[in-house]
Each structure stands twice: as C-alpha cells, then as structure tokens.
Amino acid sequence: MAHHNLDSLDKKILRLIAEDARMPFLEVARVCNVSGAAIHQRIQKLSNQGVLKGSKFNIDPEKIGYETCAFIGINLKHPENFDEVVEKLKRIPEIVECHYTTGDYDMFMKIYALNNHHLLNIIHDNLQPLGLSRSETIISFNSAFCRQLPIVDAPAEEDDDMDDANEMNIE
Image (cartoon, rainbow, N blue to C red):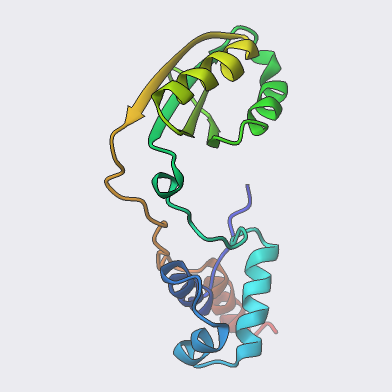
C-alpha cells in the first residue's frame, strides 16, 4: 500500500473535513486562507490518491431498528476459498466490515442485526453454509466511542528532498 506524504495544507484540510464533512469548501478555503479552487483541487487529489474514500452520512443503526451489534471471528475449513467467501460475505448487507486477520481467526467482521434472533438466523442461514470450521460471536453492549484517526504532523519527506536540492542548487 502506498503511503502518501501530505503537506501542511493537506493535513489542515483533512482535519477540518474529518471534524465536519458538511463544511462547505469555501469555508474550508477561508479557514486555510486559500482559494476555493485550491480546496477543490486538493480534495480531488486526495480522493484520486485514495486518502479520502468517498463521503457519506453515518446512520445510527439503533435508530433504524438494528438493536444488536456483534463481532464475529471465523475460520474456514478451506482457507484457499477466501476470495469466494469474501464475495459471498459482501452480499450480506448486515455485515458492515470484514478483515483478514492474524491470530485466532481467518477473518473478523462487524455485523448489525435487528435483534439476537435475527443475528442467529444470519449466522445459521448465511455464514454456516460458507464452510466454517469454527466461529465465535461477541455481542457489543454499546460503543464507547468511534472516531477518525488523527492527522499527525510527521516531518514530510518531500521537504527534506527540497532542502537537499536547495543546498546543492538543483532546480
């Protein structure tokens, strides 16, 4: 996976929109003291690089009837079928995240269900037929918090390259 070096403007933009994705680009531009066009270009660049992955509203699952949140670790009888299993898991709308993992499980997923009975049906009807050797379900009582990662101010490599180029009078 490519790591992208972000300059201070990129980081400032990311901090602002991570805090409030509905902040108008012109407001972001005002706070950053640049033009609206510059913000549009930066947002496009960050999207093209895959740093920004879309924009969406976060729906509270409980408010629309999904009362059970669970984490399920699974092991496959035939791990060589990972790709096929992942494609089938993508067709189960209640699964909102799925990760390949190290440790006790081949995959670990986050799932929402209307209630415990619905969760049991999903496990029995949708997951068991995938060829599981074992699974473990952990029900979440409540999320303590959920947040975006911080945008850190690590030294930018390109700044070091520019310093080296300036010292050698390279253009």
